[in-house]
Image 1 (cartoon, rainbow, N blue to C red):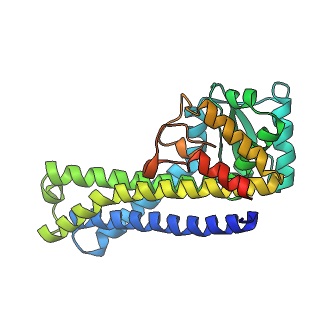
Image 2 (cartoon, rainbow, N blue to C red; image 1 turned 60 degrees about the vertical axis):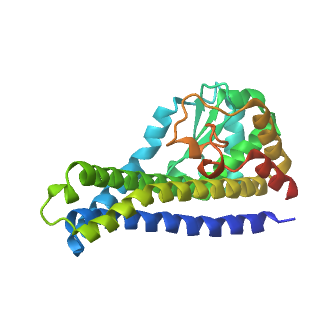
Image 3 (spheres, rainbow, N blue to C red; image 1 turned 180 degrees about the horizontal axis):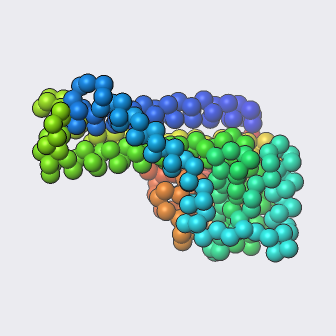
Length: 292
Protein backbone atom coordinates (compact mmCIF):
# COMPACT_ATOMS: atom_id res chain seq x y z
CA UNK A 1 0.00 0.00 0.00
CA UNK A 2 1.55 3.31 -1.10
CA UNK A 3 1.52 6.27 1.27
CA UNK A 4 0.30 9.77 0.41
CA UNK A 5 3.87 11.01 0.13
CA UNK A 6 5.06 8.14 -2.08
CA UNK A 7 2.21 8.76 -4.52
CA UNK A 8 2.90 12.50 -4.53
CA UNK A 9 6.65 12.10 -5.16
CA UNK A 10 6.12 9.52 -7.91
CA UNK A 11 3.63 11.64 -9.82
CA UNK A 12 5.72 14.78 -9.52
CA UNK A 13 8.74 13.01 -11.01
CA UNK A 14 6.68 11.65 -13.88
CA UNK A 15 5.16 15.08 -14.53
CA UNK A 16 8.52 16.83 -14.79
CA UNK A 17 9.74 14.23 -17.28
CA UNK A 18 6.61 14.66 -19.41
CA UNK A 19 6.67 18.47 -19.47
CA UNK A 20 10.34 18.28 -20.51
CA UNK A 21 9.34 15.99 -23.39
CA UNK A 22 6.60 18.41 -24.50
CA UNK A 23 9.17 21.22 -24.51
CA UNK A 24 11.57 19.07 -26.52
CA UNK A 25 8.88 18.25 -29.10
CA UNK A 26 8.01 21.95 -29.34
CA UNK A 27 11.63 22.87 -30.04
CA UNK A 28 11.84 20.05 -32.60
CA UNK A 29 8.80 21.50 -34.38
CA UNK A 30 10.45 24.95 -34.43
CA UNK A 31 13.57 23.36 -35.90
CA UNK A 32 11.57 21.43 -38.52
CA UNK A 33 9.71 24.61 -39.46
CA UNK A 34 12.99 26.52 -39.83
CA UNK A 35 14.45 23.78 -42.05
CA UNK A 36 11.54 24.13 -44.46
CA UNK A 37 11.62 27.91 -44.69
CA UNK A 38 15.21 28.92 -43.92
CA UNK A 39 17.45 25.88 -44.37
CA UNK A 40 20.05 24.83 -41.82
CA UNK A 41 21.23 28.27 -40.70
CA UNK A 42 20.53 29.59 -37.18
CA UNK A 43 18.37 32.52 -38.32
CA UNK A 44 15.26 30.46 -38.93
CA UNK A 45 15.48 28.68 -35.61
CA UNK A 46 16.05 31.98 -33.80
CA UNK A 47 13.04 33.63 -35.45
CA UNK A 48 10.89 30.57 -34.81
CA UNK A 49 11.92 30.44 -31.17
CA UNK A 50 11.19 34.17 -30.79
CA UNK A 51 7.72 33.78 -32.26
CA UNK A 52 7.13 30.68 -30.14
CA UNK A 53 8.05 32.46 -26.92
CA UNK A 54 5.68 35.32 -27.72
CA UNK A 55 2.81 32.99 -28.58
CA UNK A 56 3.23 30.93 -25.40
CA UNK A 57 3.46 34.09 -23.27
CA UNK A 58 0.25 35.61 -24.69
CA UNK A 59 -1.64 32.32 -24.32
CA UNK A 60 -0.30 31.85 -20.80
CA UNK A 61 -1.52 35.20 -19.45
CA UNK A 62 -4.87 35.25 -21.26
CA UNK A 63 -5.90 31.63 -20.62
CA UNK A 64 -7.73 31.97 -17.27
CA UNK A 65 -10.28 34.57 -18.31
CA UNK A 66 -10.91 32.79 -21.62
CA UNK A 67 -11.49 29.42 -19.93
CA UNK A 68 -13.95 30.85 -17.41
CA UNK A 69 -15.83 32.69 -20.17
CA UNK A 70 -15.97 29.66 -22.47
CA UNK A 71 -17.23 27.49 -19.59
CA UNK A 72 -20.06 29.87 -18.75
CA UNK A 73 -18.83 30.29 -15.18
CA UNK A 74 -20.35 32.94 -12.90
CA UNK A 75 -18.89 34.08 -9.61
CA UNK A 76 -20.41 32.40 -6.55
CA UNK A 77 -21.74 34.90 -4.02
CA UNK A 78 -21.53 33.92 -0.38
CA UNK A 79 -25.18 34.73 0.23
CA UNK A 80 -26.16 32.34 -2.58
CA UNK A 81 -23.64 29.53 -1.93
CA UNK A 82 -22.57 29.88 1.73
CA UNK A 83 -21.95 26.13 2.11
CA UNK A 84 -19.55 26.01 -0.85
CA UNK A 85 -17.71 29.16 0.15
CA UNK A 86 -17.21 27.90 3.70
CA UNK A 87 -15.83 24.54 2.46
CA UNK A 88 -13.35 26.19 0.08
CA UNK A 89 -12.34 28.78 2.66
CA UNK A 90 -11.59 26.17 5.32
CA UNK A 91 -9.62 23.94 2.96
CA UNK A 92 -7.65 26.92 1.60
CA UNK A 93 -6.46 27.67 5.13
CA UNK A 94 -5.55 24.02 5.69
CA UNK A 95 -3.69 23.84 2.36
CA UNK A 96 -1.83 27.08 3.00
CA UNK A 97 -2.96 28.74 -0.24
CA UNK A 98 -4.76 32.06 -0.73
CA UNK A 99 -8.52 31.88 -0.97
CA UNK A 100 -9.30 31.44 -4.69
CA UNK A 101 -12.18 33.10 -6.45
CA UNK A 102 -15.11 30.69 -6.58
CA UNK A 103 -17.33 30.19 -9.62
CA UNK A 104 -20.40 28.12 -10.41
CA UNK A 105 -21.26 26.61 -13.80
CA UNK A 106 -24.94 25.92 -14.46
CA UNK A 107 -24.72 22.35 -15.71
CA UNK A 108 -26.44 19.19 -14.44
CA UNK A 109 -23.30 17.05 -14.83
CA UNK A 110 -21.21 16.79 -11.63
CA UNK A 111 -17.77 18.28 -12.25
CA UNK A 112 -15.32 21.01 -11.22
CA UNK A 113 -12.11 22.64 -12.39
CA UNK A 114 -9.37 25.02 -11.27
CA UNK A 115 -7.47 27.64 -13.24
CA UNK A 116 -4.73 30.10 -12.33
CA UNK A 117 -1.12 30.81 -13.28
CA UNK A 118 -0.31 31.26 -9.58
CA UNK A 119 -2.02 30.51 -6.24
CA UNK A 120 -2.57 34.26 -5.77
CA UNK A 121 -4.57 34.49 -9.02
CA UNK A 122 -6.39 31.18 -8.94
CA UNK A 123 -10.07 30.36 -9.40
CA UNK A 124 -12.11 27.23 -8.80
CA UNK A 125 -15.42 26.38 -10.44
CA UNK A 126 -18.07 23.81 -9.54
CA UNK A 127 -21.07 22.71 -11.58
CA UNK A 128 -24.52 22.96 -10.04
CA UNK A 129 -24.87 19.24 -10.69
CA UNK A 130 -21.94 18.52 -8.39
CA UNK A 131 -23.23 20.84 -5.66
CA UNK A 132 -26.63 19.14 -5.74
CA UNK A 133 -25.22 15.60 -5.69
CA UNK A 134 -22.39 15.59 -3.13
CA UNK A 135 -22.56 15.40 0.65
CA UNK A 136 -20.11 17.44 2.71
CA UNK A 137 -17.32 14.84 2.83
CA UNK A 138 -17.54 14.32 -0.94
CA UNK A 139 -17.63 18.05 -1.68
CA UNK A 140 -14.62 18.53 0.58
CA UNK A 141 -12.81 15.78 -1.35
CA UNK A 142 -13.50 17.43 -4.70
CA UNK A 143 -12.61 20.90 -3.39
CA UNK A 144 -9.39 19.55 -1.85
CA UNK A 145 -8.51 17.97 -5.22
CA UNK A 146 -8.99 21.30 -7.01
CA UNK A 147 -7.06 23.25 -4.36
CA UNK A 148 -4.28 20.68 -4.74
CA UNK A 149 -4.09 21.58 -8.42
CA UNK A 150 -3.55 25.18 -7.33
CA UNK A 151 -1.02 24.27 -4.64
CA UNK A 152 0.91 21.99 -7.03
CA UNK A 153 0.86 24.66 -9.79
CA UNK A 154 -0.92 22.19 -12.08
CA UNK A 155 -2.96 24.92 -13.80
CA UNK A 156 0.25 26.73 -14.68
CA UNK A 157 1.81 23.55 -16.02
CA UNK A 158 -1.33 22.63 -17.96
CA UNK A 159 -1.56 26.11 -19.50
CA UNK A 160 2.07 25.97 -20.64
CA UNK A 161 1.59 22.46 -22.07
CA UNK A 162 -1.59 23.46 -23.93
CA UNK A 163 0.13 26.56 -25.32
CA UNK A 164 3.11 24.55 -26.55
CA UNK A 165 0.90 21.89 -28.13
CA UNK A 166 -1.13 24.64 -29.81
CA UNK A 167 2.07 26.21 -31.09
CA UNK A 168 3.24 22.89 -32.53
CA UNK A 169 -0.11 22.50 -34.32
CA UNK A 170 0.17 26.02 -35.81
CA UNK A 171 3.73 25.48 -37.03
CA UNK A 172 2.76 22.11 -38.48
CA UNK A 173 -0.26 23.56 -40.29
CA UNK A 174 1.73 26.44 -41.81
CA UNK A 175 4.58 24.13 -42.82
CA UNK A 176 2.31 21.54 -44.43
CA UNK A 177 0.29 24.14 -46.31
CA UNK A 178 3.49 25.71 -47.57
CA UNK A 179 4.96 22.40 -48.69
CA UNK A 180 1.89 21.14 -50.51
CA UNK A 181 0.35 24.36 -51.84
CA UNK A 182 3.21 26.79 -52.23
CA UNK A 183 6.10 24.56 -53.18
CA UNK A 184 9.12 23.81 -51.02
CA UNK A 185 9.51 26.50 -48.39
CA UNK A 186 6.44 28.25 -49.73
CA UNK A 187 8.51 29.32 -52.71
CA UNK A 188 10.45 31.61 -50.39
CA UNK A 189 14.00 32.48 -51.05
CA UNK A 190 16.30 30.80 -48.55
CA UNK A 191 14.10 27.79 -47.99
CA UNK A 192 15.69 24.48 -47.15
CA UNK A 193 17.15 22.12 -49.74
CA UNK A 194 15.18 19.04 -50.75
CA UNK A 195 16.75 16.82 -48.11
CA UNK A 196 16.44 19.41 -45.34
CA UNK A 197 12.87 20.24 -46.30
CA UNK A 198 11.99 16.53 -46.20
CA UNK A 199 13.45 16.22 -42.69
CA UNK A 200 11.49 19.30 -41.66
CA UNK A 201 8.33 17.85 -43.18
CA UNK A 202 8.67 14.57 -41.28
CA UNK A 203 9.23 16.48 -38.04
CA UNK A 204 6.18 18.73 -38.40
CA UNK A 205 3.99 15.75 -39.31
CA UNK A 206 5.03 13.71 -36.27
CA UNK A 207 5.40 16.55 -33.74
CA UNK A 208 1.69 17.46 -33.23
CA UNK A 209 0.70 13.82 -32.63
CA UNK A 210 3.55 13.19 -30.20
CA UNK A 211 3.05 16.51 -28.38
CA UNK A 212 -0.66 15.85 -27.90
CA UNK A 213 -0.10 12.31 -26.60
CA UNK A 214 2.52 13.52 -24.11
CA UNK A 215 0.30 16.41 -22.98
CA UNK A 216 -2.53 13.98 -22.28
CA UNK A 217 -0.18 11.67 -20.37
CA UNK A 218 0.93 14.70 -18.34
CA UNK A 219 -2.71 15.56 -17.60
CA UNK A 220 -3.35 12.03 -16.32
CA UNK A 221 -0.30 12.18 -14.04
CA UNK A 222 -1.39 15.51 -12.56
CA UNK A 223 -4.82 14.06 -11.79
CA UNK A 224 -3.25 11.23 -9.81
CA UNK A 225 -1.08 13.80 -8.03
CA UNK A 226 -4.08 15.99 -7.15
CA UNK A 227 -5.98 12.95 -5.86
CA UNK A 228 -3.08 12.03 -3.58
CA UNK A 229 -2.50 15.61 -2.41
CA UNK A 230 -6.21 16.21 -1.87
CA UNK A 231 -6.58 13.00 0.14
CA UNK A 232 -3.59 14.05 2.23
CA UNK A 233 -5.22 17.44 2.82
CA UNK A 234 -8.55 16.08 4.09
CA UNK A 235 -7.00 12.93 5.64
CA UNK A 236 -10.08 11.15 4.35
CA UNK A 237 -9.48 9.46 0.96
CA UNK A 238 -12.89 7.77 1.13
CA UNK A 239 -14.64 11.13 0.68
CA UNK A 240 -12.91 11.74 -2.64
CA UNK A 241 -13.35 8.09 -3.68
CA UNK A 242 -17.08 8.30 -2.92
CA UNK A 243 -17.38 11.47 -5.04
CA UNK A 244 -15.73 9.67 -7.95
CA UNK A 245 -18.06 6.70 -7.55
CA UNK A 246 -21.10 8.99 -7.73
CA UNK A 247 -19.68 10.66 -10.82
CA UNK A 248 -19.09 7.29 -12.44
CA UNK A 249 -22.75 6.36 -11.91
CA UNK A 250 -24.17 9.67 -13.14
CA UNK A 251 -21.81 10.57 -16.00
CA UNK A 252 -19.62 13.65 -16.25
CA UNK A 253 -20.31 15.07 -19.73
CA UNK A 254 -20.31 18.89 -19.38
CA UNK A 255 -22.18 20.75 -22.10
CA UNK A 256 -19.72 23.61 -22.60
CA UNK A 257 -16.50 21.64 -22.16
CA UNK A 258 -14.11 21.61 -25.13
CA UNK A 259 -10.99 19.71 -26.12
CA UNK A 260 -8.93 22.66 -24.92
CA UNK A 261 -10.55 22.82 -21.46
CA UNK A 262 -11.24 19.11 -20.84
CA UNK A 263 -7.95 18.40 -19.05
CA UNK A 264 -8.73 21.02 -16.39
CA UNK A 265 -11.84 19.27 -15.08
CA UNK A 266 -12.03 17.04 -12.02
CA UNK A 267 -13.22 14.14 -14.19
CA UNK A 268 -13.19 13.91 -17.96
CA UNK A 269 -16.11 15.97 -19.34
CA UNK A 270 -15.77 14.36 -22.76
CA UNK A 271 -16.03 10.76 -23.92
CA UNK A 272 -12.40 10.04 -24.79
CA UNK A 273 -10.43 7.03 -23.63
CA UNK A 274 -7.14 5.22 -24.02
CA UNK A 275 -4.11 7.26 -25.10
CA UNK A 276 -6.37 10.20 -25.93
CA UNK A 277 -7.95 10.37 -22.47
CA UNK A 278 -7.37 13.55 -20.47
CA UNK A 279 -7.93 11.70 -17.18
CA UNK A 280 -7.09 8.28 -15.75
CA UNK A 281 -9.98 5.79 -15.61
CA UNK A 282 -12.29 6.50 -12.68
CA UNK A 283 -11.93 2.92 -11.46
CA UNK A 284 -8.16 3.30 -11.26
CA UNK A 285 -8.43 6.58 -9.35
CA UNK A 286 -10.92 5.06 -6.92
CA UNK A 287 -8.70 2.01 -6.39
CA UNK A 288 -5.64 4.14 -5.66
CA UNK A 289 -7.55 6.24 -3.13
CA UNK A 290 -8.90 3.19 -1.35
CA UNK A 291 -5.41 1.71 -1.17
CA UNK A 292 -4.01 4.77 0.65
